[in-house]
View 1 (spheres, rainbow, N blue to C red):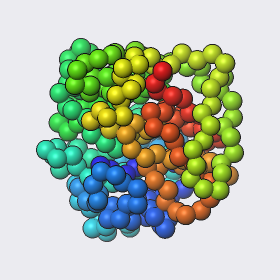
View 2: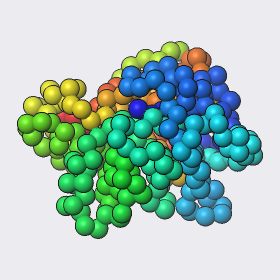
View 3: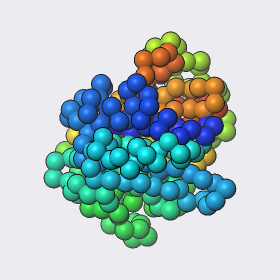
Length: 297
């Protein structure tokens, strides 16, 4: 449905991150290699980045046109550098509006979010109605509604917990027979050990599990049927110091580099070090390491 990418580490230009790699987001806008749903991402693009010495809120550029048509972005991308960037190219879900306000990244003023997938807007609205303090979504599209739900949760719990709770709640609501429920997930991220070193190809990593961790508990009936649910809930969220992402129904990978960490829907080159995130997992990254957790019991 979309492709997205985030970087956290030493400053890199938007051009380095989104335009210049052999299989960059620019190339993925017309020739994605691992997108299972759809063939092209021509319904818009966006990028957000942090400049903490100037202000806490990130800057954004969003367009409702294909990335390859925007010469202005190509011109500015080479002179804007940041240590935390989130960018996406969009393939709009059928029935969703094609407009700048429906294009990632979405923001609550201090965070950025991209959604690769689809979710029933009715299910998201039902959860939002239970939370009257949630801010108005930026758009009527499913991804903007989902972002509003994440922002409401993140106002009271850590960002990783908020993202996990929203994804598991929507996955449970997606089941046609309503079997099972999801409960909020939390963990002590500071206790997580270092991840295994990257392998020379996209491989399945061993999931890092601390001795004690409270996870989202999805009933066994939900777990067994999650793979056939309609919702695809790959989220990518940044707050300037961390990246949080989920793999739920689509591809996600990461690579730990000498000067930071990149997280993406698919590799933007054919070099070694890319690690595939298993489905139904949550990823948290800072400038030095990546931690994975299962989102299902």
